[in-house]
Length: 213
Image (tube, rainbow, N blue to C red; front, top):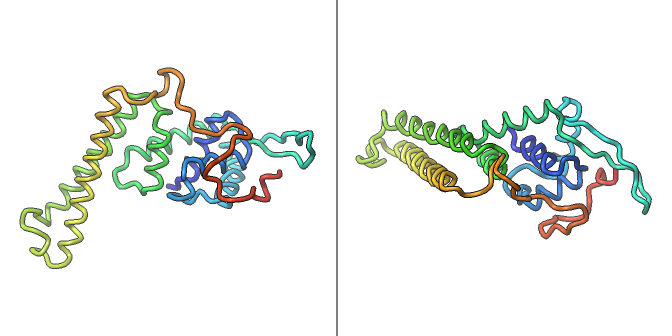
């Protein structure tokens, strides 16, 4: 699963309709260019591919009064909305998700109802517990990794990762159940995108050539 599709769909949904540079700006604002493959080329490729697949609808927008070619703005279709929520749920429930996909899922988690978000995260915890159980069928942490030679260090790493992942996820569940954050259907959501013309403090450079279209 690629994080870029989830990120792009999430950014466009928050705008309602957005052009490529807005999407790129938002993802840089989220820092996604640092922890995922959300680079300009990947973003524009994803926009075009998802438009071809019917996940996005492309709108040709008239050029500004200052001149220049028209831009293409994108809107998430009904099919795209279904895909977005399928990707979001998978990002949150899967214990062995890649870091960039999990990060995207956590960044967009409030698009779900609170109860559903908690249920998905509990699935993630259960996955960690099962993974730990399968590892400890062959390795006993109390005996230490040296009991299996240097391969024991690998299993020791897996056990620590399972414990840390489950602990962090359970902490997030506790905060959500205690009322943290505003989830879908609960009121005005957190605004996590930049307005038209709003300066991005994390911008990496000049607009991509396709931003002019």
